[in-house]
Image (cartoon, rainbow, N blue to C red):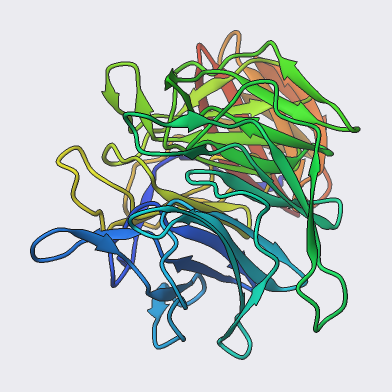
Length: 383
């Protein structure tokens, strides 16, 4: 009996509902299918001012929710992390001076409280949750002309529900970094890109109890970028490069290989926000090349697990898979590296060029890489 196969190859950033209050340098966190954008800066009628708004993008409804309690005080270029369902907005600038303050937001009650402040002020730092604790790293102090770049790393222990918790100074980064990404994937904490007098291509990782430099450099220098991750993959998005603002996106498989270029954003942007929900990467806001706030939101499945087809009617999609009597033959072209994942995101097969395999009925996700370009698609096998 002949099996039915549908194969769609697609990697196109899709527009989503724009953010109501555009800004850059915002805290961004995903909780229960919503992406919360908090604080940052925006351009007012006469000047650039702190943004106190809290707005949440509902991924399923493609709409924004407003009306949350605003930030108690300004946080521009803060670190941001989620612990036990609550969002921590860590330090940054109050619009004039670097701050130590850490505010905690409960999405369920829309209430703010204050936890222990950082030991020292930090601006343009990065934060994330790793192994049950919040880590806040790097940043700078002072203005851009007389700034001091930092490599200090702090770890937060929340204590009991009513206490303020405490911060501990731990092992420092190898390279001072500001406006960089800090992401926990691949069983390690990853500090990616950023600025240290010039924009950086490097990244380093922490686990266990030591920061180590990874020799694999990004294809582009990136400061003011967004970094997300899933499984064993890192994804670096936008930012400032050697010759200006970037729209490019690149990914790295931490288990092997080099940084690889993938489909770029619709426009260059820096100090942008990004989060992963249901294996899709959502990019929100940021600053454009005219230093204006961007309201546009776009999403793509640049990470291998859970790849989706394009929206109907947007592209003519080639088919390059056949299945006869349960055996699939997938032709991705000479020299292409091919990986096939099941609907749980686990890799079931890898090969090169033309791949043949026995596939049970179900949905599979294919990632093909050739000459620095990545194509993705979904394979549905029905008997």
